[in-house]
Each structure stands twice: as C-alpha cells, then as structure tokens.
Image 1 (cartoon, rainbow, N blue to C red):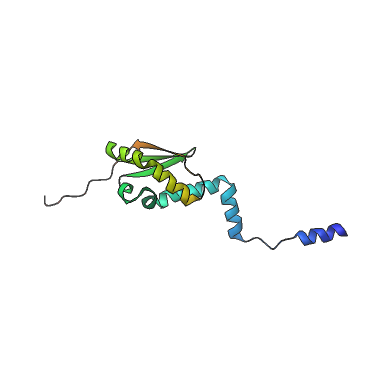
Image 2: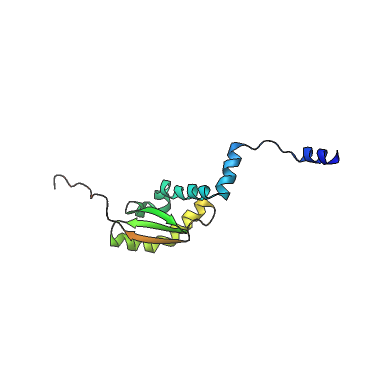
Length: 118
C-alpha cells in the first residue's frame, strides 16, 4: 500500500507537445539537424550583409560548415571572417554547432547584374 501511494505522488502533470519537441531537439540527431537548418534560414544575419551575397552554406559535416564562395577573392574574405561567422552561429544555437569552416570555390556564381543601356 505504501508503494502505491509513493507511485501516485510521483505522477506528474502531462507533458506538453512543445516540451517533448524541445527535449527531442536537445537529445536527437534530428534536433541537431534542425539547429543546423537555421544557418541557411539566417544566413544574411550570420555571414553579415557584406558577405552573404558572395557565398552560401553548402553543408555541415562533423561540425565543419562548408561554404561555397563565388570567386577566389570572396573565398579569401570568408576565410578572414570565418571565426566571426563561427561565433555567431554558435551564439545563435546556444551550443557549439560549428567548430570550423571550409570554403569551396563555387561552380555556379550568381549572374552579374544586368547593365542594359551601357
């Protein structure tokens, strides 16, 4: 009888769906992928207005973010600012999501602005 009372007192209120999802985000691989997806979503903020138009995130593997830059010059600029980008990403996530950045030269840079009438 004492065991039953103890079990009844240990029962908790039902857990909300939001709490369950938050717990899964912290503990599962899917949660990490959802955190990483924010890099694409918030790229202008994370890379900064200066860089975001000259490259884009390609993938994250083993805590390394691969960025595709649109020219060798922009590869150098991304390399110069990589620690700032890593810091912003990890602050956004509240954990170490990215520990390094690898910059690739992109095959398909965006089309240059039209110069009609020139």
